[in-house]
View 1 (tube, rainbow, N blue to C red):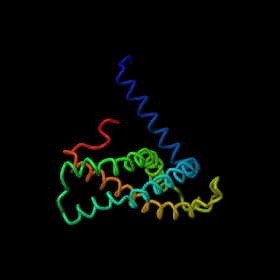
View 2: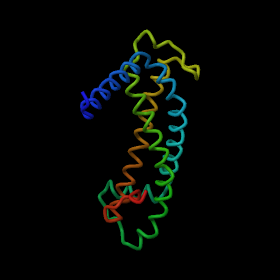
View 3: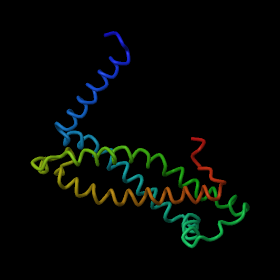
View 4: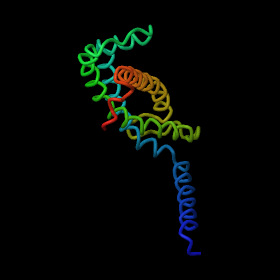
Length: 168
């Protein structure tokens, strides 16, 4: 027909249909591709979250927030800022990278048929065992994510509403 937008929409719709059919045809193989990156990223996020939980200044910020206490003076902020920021900066890239397989795996798990639950993944686990473990790990991951965002919010309260990641 020669109309670029009509042609583009037609191609786009065909690709979307193909993509959905491809994923739903064999969700187990796609899950298998995400398992190793999920496991690696999750361990990094949980490790960084453990560091944040041990950070005394970060813990104090969260206690202050719970009781809606005073956030302190500018002098206090100047001292506290680098103590928390270094750990937030360390965790953020791992959190971003872990979120990608986390979201994808959630989408794919809902597509796995019952008869595929006993199939083995490349790490030796059955699909069913991985899904159970993933559900447990998702709670841990969500907790780490909540900790990160709670501390980012406390950082922003002390920094005129500016995120430490605005420059990145």
